[in-house]
Image (cartoon, rainbow, N blue to C red):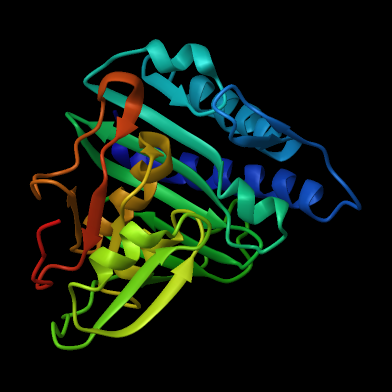
Length: 265
């Protein structure tokens, strides 16, 4: 994989998918259906998936591609692969809360080494540059011209006053019980993979996820967090969260800035 070539391709496809998503989001109405696992799907999910999948297959035909919306891709196995969630945070999209994202990542030997997270409704874009450093882009998000880039770096956490971020749509008592093990100065909720990016930007210290996720939900945000000096570990034993697992299902996990004194479950 030519990683320097990958970054601009991911960026362009994320922007193109974001445009299509916003067309649906700004329409008077749109249909919502349930998939086999009872999760919701809309025309925006499917249209964005088609744009990204076609673009990645055209640019990188020899690289395995796994996408949330293409069930046949879930049976594919490879040491290195592209993985896509075309619209993460569909519940936020349906409720018109804005905190949904386009996610594209590249996994190499179990680790997401490159990724982009684009939140078109709130105008935030985070991605790993050609060197693997995470940056936030601001500006007009022109498809052919990159705007101002700000390098991202995790915070130096104060374990006596941690900043916690948790899921907006999936927060439950188990999550609150775990957060209760820490000295928390502030706790906020956010949708989709933005939670990883808030830690990467130094706006939060820790994100525990005690609930079901799939690798396409987390890979891009995980890559952005790694590129900003953060990490993601399994909830049970604090070993690294790895990718390419059977069925692409994740265990519970903790995303955090190094320096946080992680608590056992």
